[in-house]
Structure formats: structure tokens, C-alpha cells
Length: 335
Length: 254
Ligand SMILES: Nc1ncnc2c1ncn2[C@@H]1O[C@H](COP(=O)(O)OP(=O)(O)OP(=O)(O)O)[C@@H](O)[C@H]1O
Ligand SMILES: [Mg+2]
Image (cartoon, rainbow over all chains, first blue to last red; front, side, top):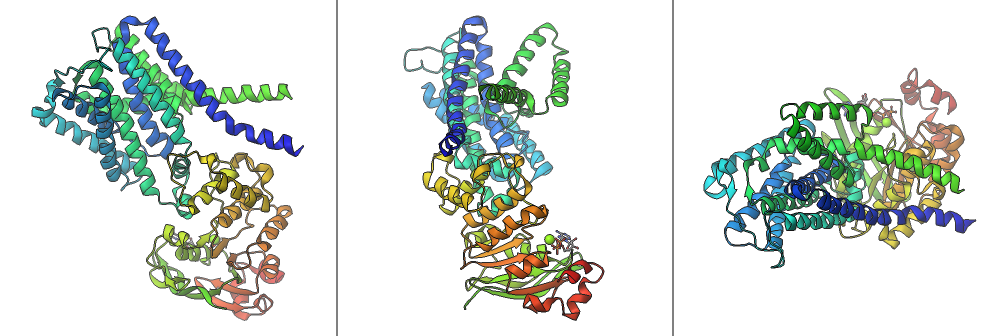
């Protein structure tokens, strides 16, 4: 009897790891089927991956720490420009470029975090907007470095591992991006279930409770900003390598706001919600904008309203509910 | 016995309303003290001031000989000054086990590790399991807090406090909101608190106060108006006056 309760109690602990592996397998599967199904759209699919990294990074801050941000593209753009500038200046190894992007994003995350964490609530949101606008303006003004409004171009990244060229078809870029996404997703899955990740969840719920446990909030949140910056910077660097241009839109308020929309669409506080939201938003944008470029935002608006009204926890939250219902039913049948 | 915890001349105003007036109080190691007073007397505010959640306008808080008045809430907790909340403050989506493990990890300085599994620290898990067992929470240890009974949530508040290994524990109405059928379990948990711990309990139920404390202080309108053994409280004219109307019920019970 005691044995039985122990076992059933231990079961939920094993589940997350198994679920992670299944999740990674699903992402790989979806990514590879995209590769085979849409061989002519690989450039677009690569962009989806790079934006997915941005949305994942936003989820870390918004979904796991409860900090609203409309300036996440600052971290993404920092990674994109850093990788782009490095590439033009002779550092052409793609992996090194990704690392440079990640570090640039992390450093930017450190600074934006240090500024944003001074405030709470609405002022914090306004700060995030101010920061991305500032960086946007800086990138615009420093045209000698960034190409200004013409964008940064002329990058020629070296072949991946000296073998796979970043060619016109974008095969290498896409598969490289997919691998990056898998690695990032695996690492983040571990991070959100570390003691650190649990404290973040607690901070989102009740910061006062966390401080009453004797834990300082500020360094924890700042660390999350750095991690988030590294992820966003990775996404930016991937975009820079894949498209070989970096434009001002990569540090824009608009991209930041779209990232938040994608996150809400997919469901905040779930890593895979960020992915679902990105894929659906960008697929909609891609197809509907092709048919009617003027009305696609109307459609997205309608979809968003429907989601907020009927699935307030986003698509992933609703999927979770369905899964919970199914497993409960399954469990009952099993007994 | 030596004085472990000492508050002197603590004062606080909220926009002209004097919520704490010159409160002085000290506790010895292992002492059990009850703080009572009518609603709105400033009891919770006193706890907030002492634990560093609020800054006092004047006065001093000393813990184990050290002046901690200038320290923040986190530093005071780390020095062993721990509180519970009048209304539970728990994380609804986490399990009791997770609450206690997080607390134990904090004490071990591992609460914010990134490169570790939360459930992978067997020392912390074992200690958490032990504490939860002491409080009879093993059955619900792995259920989300949102789904367990309020009485169990109150016990969990105590479990968390215990996991912090405090020197001084301030319990803000530990049985508040608990159905009377469940109060014996809370009382039992309180009776089993480590003997060396200094405990200040805010409580309205005079029966509980009688069984728990050797000494009682009464706070009314921000001022300490009585200090002495529980048996004398009800006879004190000042206390009777303070409770009259606002809390006549407790007076008659005592
Ligand atoms: N942050 C605050 N700002 C302004 N007024 C406050 C604040 N906190 C408490 N008060 C006021 O101070 C007074 C004392 O409140 P407190 O919560 O300390 O009382 P209490 O003795 O704990 O009461 P109860 O028995 O209801 O818990 C009340 O009049 C309350 O409205
Ligand atoms: Mg109170």
C-alpha cells in the first residue's frame, strides 16, 4: 500500500523529462516536414525560427517572471547587428557569429533589465518601449556602423563547419536554425525547471512571498533578462546570417509588439506556446498578406480577439486543458 | 534567560493615523508570547515593521544583539527573523513539497541555481519530506496548493516557516479562516515548534492563547496597554475598555 502511493507520487516527477524529449522530437519533426513540404519557402521558415527565438526569449520575461515588455526586439536587434557587424569585419564562422549575437543580446539584456527592474507595472512597460526606441534611433544615427536606414549588408558568412554553404536556397540556414532552436529549447526546458526557474515562477506570483523566504528578487530577474537576451540575440544573429542583411526593423517597437501578440496567441508561460504562437501568426501573415496585404492585420485582430475571449490562456493553455481532460479520463479508465 | 529579540520605541504613522506608538517589547530564547488586540489595533503592522516590510518612523529592532533596523526584509529573514501571513501567501500552482524544497534550498544557498534540477537535490527533498510529515501534509505534498484545504494551506505556512529554521517566529493569526474542526491540528503544530525558538503569536481565540503562551501583550490603537500572564488579561480595566464594543466577545470569553 505504502509502496503504491510512493510510486504514484513519484510518477509526475519523471513525466517532465519524458515530455521534454517528446516535445523536442515534435519540434524536430515539424521542422523537418517544413523542410520537405515547403522547399521553396525555406527563407521564410528560417525567419519563423529566428522570430520564434525572439518570442521564446520574451516568454522567459513575460511568462515566467511576469514582467511585461514591449521592447524585446532591442535584444534581438542587438544580436542581429552584432553578428552582422562582426561578419563584415571578417569574423565569418557562423557558430562564432551566433555566439557573438548571443553575447550582445545578453549584455543588452543586462542593461535593459537593470533599467526596467527599477520600475513596476505600467511605468516598466513604458520603459521597455523607450529602450527599444532609443536603440532604434541609435542604430539609425550610427549609419557608419549599422548602415542606418539602408540596413547593414554585404555579409558573407563562411560555410557551416566549412562544408555547408549559406546559399540561395537557404537549406543550410534553415537546418542550422532548426538545430539552434532545438538546442535553445532543450536548455530552456531545463532552466525553467531549475531552482532558479521555480523562484522566477514564484516572483511572478508574489514577489513579497519570495522575499519573505529570504530570496532577493533583483538578481534573479536580472539573470533572467541576461538569459532572455542571449536567446533573443541568438535569434537575431540567425536572421543576420540567413538573410545577410540587418535592417532597422530588427530593433523596432513593431517587432516587439508583434512578438508579444505571438506570445499571447500561443499562450504565455509555456515554452511551446511561444513556438505555436509564432508559427501561427507568421503563417497567417504570410498567406493572408499574399492574398490581401491590406486586410491581414484585420484577420489577425479578429483571431486575437477570439483567442482572448474563448481561450484566454492562449492556444497552448487550451491544449493543456484538453490534454489534462484526456489524461484524467485515461487514468480513470486505467484504474 | 538572555534577550534574543528586542523592539524599542517603534513608531509608525499612516498619513496622520498613528498605527504604532512607542512599542517596546522583548523576547527571550524559547519564549512563547501572545499578542492580542482588537481589529485594526496595528498587530499586522507591528509584524511588518519588525520584519522590514515597512520602515518605522522611529524605533529600533534588535535580533541576537544586532541592530537590524536598517536591514531589508531579506537580510532579516536570513538572520532568523521569520513571519507567517494572516492571509496565506502561497503559490497556487506549486505543490506544498515545492514550497518547502524552495525554502530549504534558500537556506542552503542553492535557491537560485540555474544548472541544477529543482527536484534533484535529495538532501533538500528529504528535509522537506520530513517537515511536511511533521505537519501531517505528506498526503497532499504533491498536489497543487490551489486544490488543498485552507487548513492545510495554513499548516503549509507553518511548514515553510519551520524550513527557514528561524530564531524568532512571528505568527500572524495562524488559525485565521480555518474551520474550527481543523484548529486542533494547527494548535498541535504550534505545540510542537522547536523549544528554543522564540515565538510571538497574534491570535484572537483566547482559549488558544491560554494554552500557548505564558505571557500576553495587548495592543490597542497602536499602543501596548498590557503585559502579563494570560490569566490577568481579562481583569485589566484598560484592556476591558479597549475591547468594549469593538471586541466585547473576546473579553467575555476570557
Ligand atoms: N499600508 C497601509 N497604509 C495605510 N494604512 C494602513 C496600512 N496598513 C494598515 N493600515 C491601517 O493601520 C491600521 C492597523 O492595521 P493592522 O492591519 O496592523 O491591524 P491588525 O491589528 O492586524 O488588525 P486585524 O486584527 O484586523 O488583522 C488599520 O486602521 C489599517 O487600516
Ligand atoms: Mg492583522
